Image 1 (cartoon, rainbow over the protein chains, first blue to last red):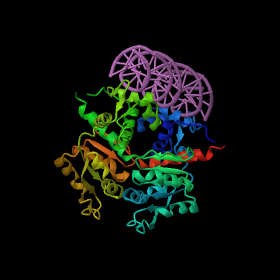
Image 2 (image 1 turned 120 degrees about the horizontal axis):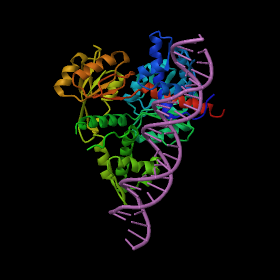
Image 3 (image 1 turned 120 degrees about the vertical axis):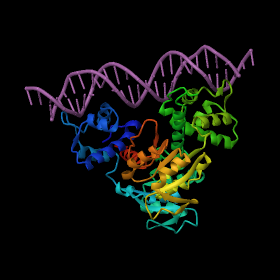
Image 4 (image 1 turned 135 degrees about the vertical axis):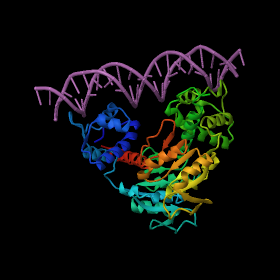
Length: 213
Length: 213
DNA sequence: TAGATTGTTAATCGATTAACAATC
DNA sequence: TAGATTGTTAATCGATTAACAATC
């Protein structure tokens, strides 16, 4: 299926394409040219065509791209045609917020369990799920063949726990902890470092302020 | 101060440098060479030196970099030597989670208000702050000269509200809504699109599965 | 002084954009 | 058929890596 090694830059743009194509679908638009899409997205038409052609070309000369078809194809490339099971490790504010984030379910990401080590949280109910003791996580993951672990716990515990998760058969970690996890290459890690994002914002503000110098 | 237009790639790496330097400080390490840092961070020493030299060079031949000094300099570049005031627009799960995220305060990001349009949330207390009616946001921002707005509300309202915020004098938006805001160039926008991050994770999982083909 | 390591220039690599022939 | 627009090759641009002279 896959023409090995699509660049990270291309992958990062796919979800955004999907979003715009979803909007077009909602507007009832049936087909779109790379040119018209480029105007909406503020990227070059050339880049759009290059990106799509990494996966074999979904368009037709003289016509453009069929919106529905292109949407489905990109969704498939992103693996959104499969269901994904996940657990949330760390049921603090962020973990609970993500658990309540309904949109994930819509995309096929099914939350099956929440875990924490804090006795005050264990047993508490979030979205009809009881928060479980983190010591039960390994068994749960094995039994339910969980694919993804969402790591929403403090830096301190993250490295240690991530190794246990991998030993339990987890295949991917969505990491919100402020550490770079060192795990076998076969384990997929996607980082969301919120504080780093906020620092970038801060940098840009400084630049704006100093502009007139 | 600034040698105009540092590339986005360089900026994105600065917070990570800061994190590693913080760890080194905690370990009591006084100085480090680009080579040793490159081993820890899994990047090339060349890139490290290039990155730092965009800002004028913080090292010394034959010695390396002083950890404390380098840490302070990068923090300054990122604008972390100033306090930043912010409000959270949208006090749902995610908004509340961010409000409770103490680490922001430690970095000088001071949360001064939370707003929502949901009457069930207005008046509720989060971290000793009462959630206010979103209709009061403009006045509040003006009166308190708020710099940053954190947008944690559904796609639907985001575009409209973002314009009001800008009219009220907001200078930067940390955007968690799944839209690309179209605002004047002088307004700083930093996006955190969680669902796009999750899709990238999903893509990588598909790649891993198909690897043996 | 000799050794280490930076700052910086040059070489390489990869990603983006431009151009155009193929084709619907 | 003529016009539109893709798929794809070639040109450009930018970012990363390598190399080394400067210097602490």
